Length: 143
Image (cartoon, rainbow, N blue to C red):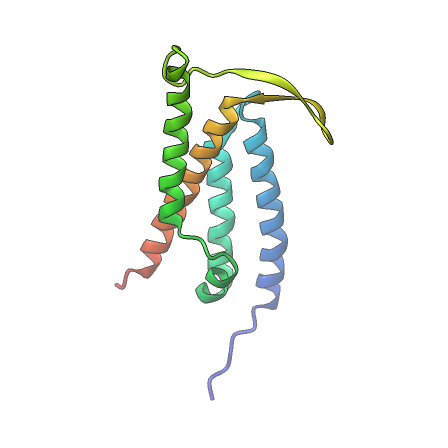
């Protein structure tokens, strides 16, 4: 009879830590166009939270709950970042020329929206997809 490991403490702490890591990554992402941070560090922090989940729980359980193709995520992120850069050129500006405006959003009131946020979304998706793909590929290698 094979005993199943009892990882109650590890799983409980991981669930709490993952919520904290994901919340912090959102904060880092949103701070990006006003303060240091943004798509890269927010994406890297999110990838760290996902890798923590992979380490603490079995791979099948995580893939069932997060059915994401990280290679496609990385490709979509790169395309979003490139098209955000090209948008400035459509209007006669330079590549990656950013613009912003203030909009009245019903729940949030007057809010600044910038194209830098779209670029950061692309960077974040590219970083998450690439980092998780690399880590999962390394974990699949046999010695």
